[in-house]
Amino acid sequence: MTPPTRTPGPGTPTTAHLRISEGQVGEVGPGGTLIYPSVTSCLTVTVRLQDGGKVGAHASLFQVPGEYRSDRILAAVKQRIGARGVHAVEVRGAVGAWHPSYFTKAIESYAEGEQVPVPTEPDPGGLARVVADALGEPRGKVTVEDLPDGDQTVD
Image 1 (spheres, rainbow, N blue to C red):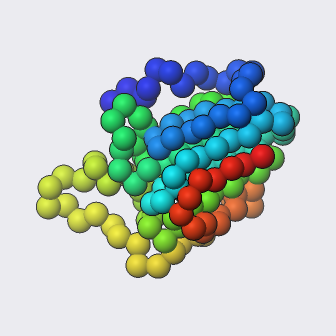
Image 2 (tube, rainbow, N blue to C red):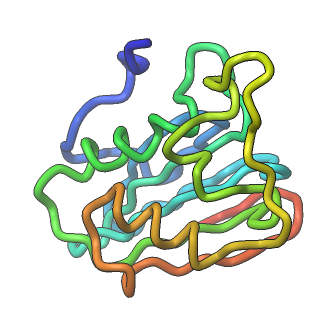
């Protein structure tokens, strides 16, 4: 599957407020706000850039047609960041619903009869490690927070 074509590479975003729905990646410049609607079984990944801008991703347990799967969304974030410096990475959402491997092999990529890993308890450390590795950032830059259902706003 080729990634959605509407997600451009690194650049200067002009949007002050941006809604990022399931399976999408987007960016705002310094002072901008990211809004992740209806985060229930999802995780959001917000990359705070050194220049004050933010790159965000709304990772869904199951692929939304035409959007990124969970095992491709972090590569899209990394491409979007490009060579720009990263200050911090914040992962938020339904931590207990996610097995860290969902970022490397999406649930829908398992063949019929193949065992899909299911989280037995929240693994914030495992999620942080997978996100840090995928983005090429030190583990210490990544924080993970379990948040209740609802919209997330990141200023």
